[in-house]
Length: 109
Length: 115
Image (cartoon, rainbow over all chains, first blue to last red; front, side):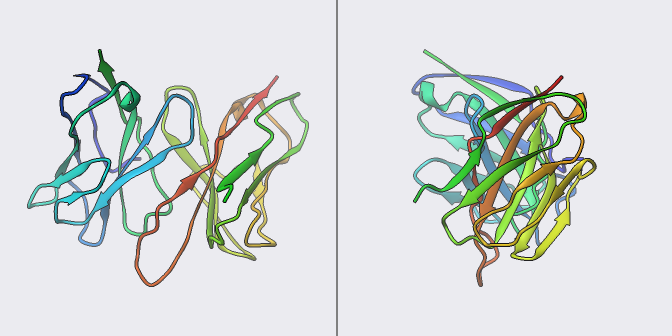
């Protein structure tokens, strides 16, 4: 079973920030939090990952709580092309992922 | 770089037939894996390989075989197709190194229907 819990769906207005939450209360000390997304029926695409510090790249920001039991992926200015299923994954080497059902994000015009 | 390529894109099989799904990567990645995705579900790991000559089972290995004779190729064989194997199959690869994370690159998928 997936080690994470995500809401099944969310809506976001185009141009606004999309904040996608993820609970991972059983995360262990050497496990990272990874975010991938799957647009339509394509293969998943890497977004960002982190251990305990907040991370930012050209696509998104990742905020991890101090106790590491939850995190939030932030897409700062969502566009229609960000409509996808977003997966939050906890794993220590970034390889043998256990995917849950993810969050289906709909960006609305 | 072509990245991760998969063939065929679509396949229809009859129950009991066998076939091989091809996966290749040109990034010199050591790690390769196969996932299946059923409708409305997340991906589930079938088999993986951490290098040529080394393979291991994932979460749902029954009915599938793999081998890794080269770094570039990681074929997935269905021994005797069953309707329960109707799914979309994704291949993925990532490198390895001194740091403990490498981005996984996924192929475009093979859509398999077993009648």
